[in-house]
Image (tube, rainbow, N blue to C red; front, side, top):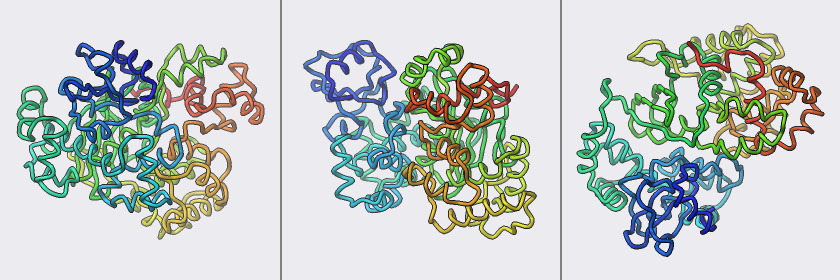
Length: 490
């Protein structure tokens, strides 16, 4: 979008927050870059230039606006709606892969050379993987500076910088303030969390956001010991590269409050990325709803409660195991089966607030389970053990870097995997916005009540007009049935 100057200027002049994260406005006279919704008086058109990423702005010598804080914009919805190499690279960079594995590690995950990834990212985002990772490190450093009391040297290494000097130089260059000055300014406006060691931050999103189906679904399907709904917040444990964490997510009218307790602060970038992915916070609900509303049978559902998101997962392998456990059983039964696996094979954790007891077991931990001890039909035991084996040995990967169609083909080849299981994994684990569940019982009931075709083939043909947002159509169709996933717990 940043190449369409006229459209960008209109968005800046109207201070339209829907375009935050789509592009950034750099002001040639002040050398400052802003989000489109920046509250200051817009500059003259001849003084504006537009960039596709904060990293491109920083690389061009612009610093972040202190008023609108463009580094805290929602991410571009484009990267979650696409499955090409650039989109997959952006999701991996958001997960901190470049900091942990370098550009060669990023390229290896994508199956391309480092030079080719560099060219592709430069062409679309105006910055290569190192510059994009540097911009992310700067944002992580700012969060740690403003929300924790960690010494600056610890902040530097936790944010992914190789030295304190590089950390100081980057913070000064990007924010035009020294790290100590950032902390002093934040102390006057940011209230420190009551629990020591907790990192409290706000996760922005594009309005509207309907929390009912999003948090209702997560709460209704929560696995005891791993997830819970408490005092208006969804809480769960997280398995992270350097340790583990506990997160509490609370919906608010203009943001989602996030409270993180991490055993290692180096996991902050990954934890934030996983939380945003879980809640689908980088979606563009206006674009989605406008297209679905064109169907007269869906329009009333959308007008009644717009802004529904797709509830995802923090770990693709975990969700695949849970999807198999949930085949042809009730939500309560699936939770019971999952809780047994957690108790037997999950790693215990210490929750200061109580309630959460374990991490969900990894595929490696589940690879040694005795299928005879599973209270499941024999065919489903085979399905589960085959899936776990493929995940454990790396022949099947379900993550942000997965190719959606390749993953579908690999899943359908496993015993016991039908279209419903494959598509629900594609929707919630892989994040494909066009995943569709025409054989789902709730979808078929909704179709019958709304007057849509009720047979899978006919419904799929009708749903072609909803593409590429059929996963969001599923969320609206599920609301027709009065199920706990559609309501926030009391």
